[in-house]
Length: 197
Image (cartoon, rainbow, N blue to C red):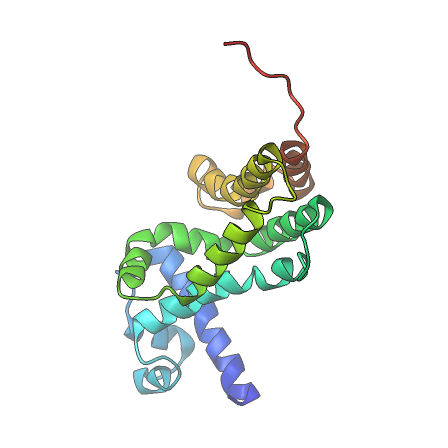
């Protein structure tokens, strides 16, 4: 794909992202997207054969946010230090792409339908990497549990802030990114006393 076509494709995805957040995937039309782009529908079809292809491309854009952080884990055994760097990079990526995560939350039903129709390739790869990491015998069961909890805090907290604070960047700004990273680190290094039974 040449550079001009690639830039046009990314611009279509940016405009579709806005449209799917504002109106939802089901209520958005390719005609409206083409109008916002100043295109004909035929020109839009050149880049994306269907509206579902646009949603899948946006979904894959979210998956690609993990490419950089996953590279921080390296090929060898994972250390707690490299895992912390991975989660920090994930938090940065989520914060820099809040609208993309909001689009996923707003359009969960449409995305679930796409998954049921066989879009699973990248998910299997991510699940395999997570399974390998969270079952690494180099970490104690307690450490592995804290790693899973740290992952959940890093990914779920920004998404939940849009639920409690409203679907906006201002809602997420209430928790500075460095505070979220500090909480993730505290979860990873928790050494609280056991509760009495």
